[in-house]
Image (cartoon, rainbow, N blue to C red):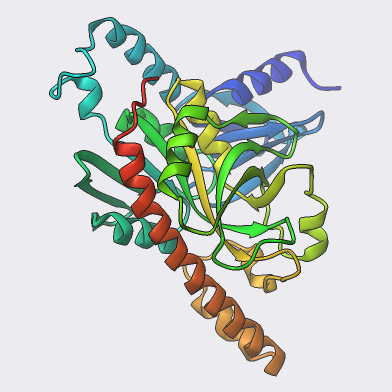
Amino acid sequence: MTDPRLAELVERAFDYRGYVTLRRSDGSSLVGFVYDRDAGHLELFDESATRRVRVALSEIAGIDFTGEDSALRSQQMWERRKGRLEPRDTPTGWEEQRPILLLVAIDRELRSAAQALGLTRRGNRATGRRSGSDFVALSVGIGGGARAAIAAEQPRAVVSCGFCGGIDQVLSPGDLILATAVRDESGQVVETPESLRTAAARGLQGMRFFEGDLACTSSVAATPAEKRALARPGTLAVDMESFTVARAAADVGIPWLALRAVIDPLESSLPAFTRETHGSHLGPALRYAASGPRAIIDLIRLSRDARRAASSLEAGLQRLGAAIASEETRP
């Protein structure tokens, strides 16, 4: 039976929007962001937001709330400031100075965002100005990094952008998905703000894009069977980041969008090494290629489809950036 004190700490940790420190019974500790729990385990991303860790409740001696609840701070700042904002038609108002924030998970997606909007990149951050608005693009990994980024940047709008896998059989590599809603593995749904999505759709006119829901998972859906298992009416594609971004933005009243480019359509499988987190996929890809001619063919196809997806994403973000910059994004 779970200790009632520990059960209460687990629930608090799940609701907490900052990093916590798990103290284990063996004397070790683990810092991370708790994203799920059940009767016997607690699930978290480590503090680098690149590794998922499952810890049995029986191994936990205590939980310390060591990281700032940044989303709560962001909300409190907004509540203090909202009564003092200058009118929307005042170009020097605080609202107009807030950037548009693009959040991605991996380096390749950050390169596409920076290229699309002409941003200057330093490390995992790219910044610049386009269509009269400031843009910030950040690579935050998969998981808890979105909340901290939103709290730090105080954006006027947030875009989750990057690559995805197709669930609807009509999709091909390079097709763009503009999310109408995102759904996580537990069935929770966050709907995209309609006014901002409508403006984005107008900006994308003339491109091959589809509007529909995104299924968001905590692990790679690499095979056709895994993608079919996620199918729901209206669900077009799957990714691993957009729900986390949408939830973090919605919790503090900031408008958000998700724009994803399809790499692997429904009937396409990803190589096994894509299920794992790597600083670079070059080494794993070379080892995979060494397994035989079929593997080489798979990698050639994946590389071709990834280039097509990156090109579409860049073109879409060019259009989207101008559309969002001109849109009234009042929280």
